[in-house]
Image (cartoon, rainbow, N blue to C red):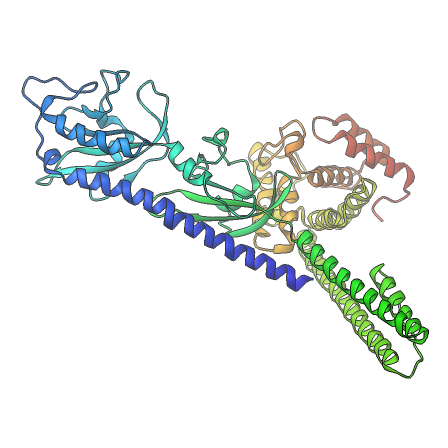
Length: 540
């Protein structure tokens, strides 16, 4: 099962990467190359390079002179065959005017192309074709466009810039017409996380900065990974588009468990059907044949129902007895394999816990007052999670995070941690960095992936005044909320440099209740209160 799952994942990654490469090579690159060749050709065209504005003509913004009419007609023909081109133009270095097709009567008369970012970028990179990030057109059209431009140079001097404005709908149509997996989604995103091409036009110009999966692309630089997107387990793949700071991102929902379940069920169905057929044939021959077959079928049925200890015992001194013995041998080996896997899983889990425990001890080894704090917090948090009926994987992530939640204090000066008096503002700001320090220390440890998020958020508050990111309400992980309550409870009921006499359990619970809805989650405080009422020693 595990081998087949890994194979499916690797095949899925390979297939999605190939699809992204094909989209980039055969659709984006071809279209972008065509547009780049267009502006390069016109930037070198003698009618542009040698063009001079007629004497007496004022700066042009809303019209073009007669001696530019032939160029305009050629542009009109190209526009007719490329309906996604909004405008084609020659921007003049001489006076900042613009020779544009089609004419835009809404252009401001004081418009100066030399002040536009696309113009400056093209001039700064005069030997290259430049692509802009999406922006709103200067006229009244309200179009969100992308400009491809090339500087016009004559005898080493800038004459201006040839450019073409492309509607974002062109890129969205390219993306929308392509299939990505069975029901995946493709999108184009700029280097700041803004979407400018998406099958759903409502998504255009939206920013992905607050999406956890987008952070793995922009911050952690992960190439392919599986994560939940809007509650659905999905594979994220992406590649950087050549020559521009864009990313082509593909999101593809996956459900390998369902595929494997279908395969397993089909095999069981085949085995059952084959066995039924054998029983039918045996019944036609003799009752002596039917009986051992029934025994085999009963055993297979028990195994199908999950009874891995089921065995068949046949004493017929023929092929059926051999078949039964071979089936038993196969089941014995299968059981041994399952036991070995279970023992290996237990060993791996013990190694994980030992690793986490060693890290936790490193936090507390030099501090007599916080010694044992992480272990106590872990036990309290685990009891709350069990009371809330969370899953085994969530409880395990919470247990790891609780043991390591203060690991970031390794990077905080001891003088601040052990200070008995009130911390200064500067000292408090240093203390507030320990969740991020801990998050960074644990980077790259795969089995602590979820625990890192919990550690990063365990000092966030419900009202949004916590740190490091000021998250509030449902923005904070439920597991981080549990850790926050458990951490505060143990801190209040233990001795500290700044408070030698700890609070009683009832005093600590009352403090938590006083901070419900501002610092702590009300429901989680309620679970802890119930646990305290029925438990003699909460940290055991």
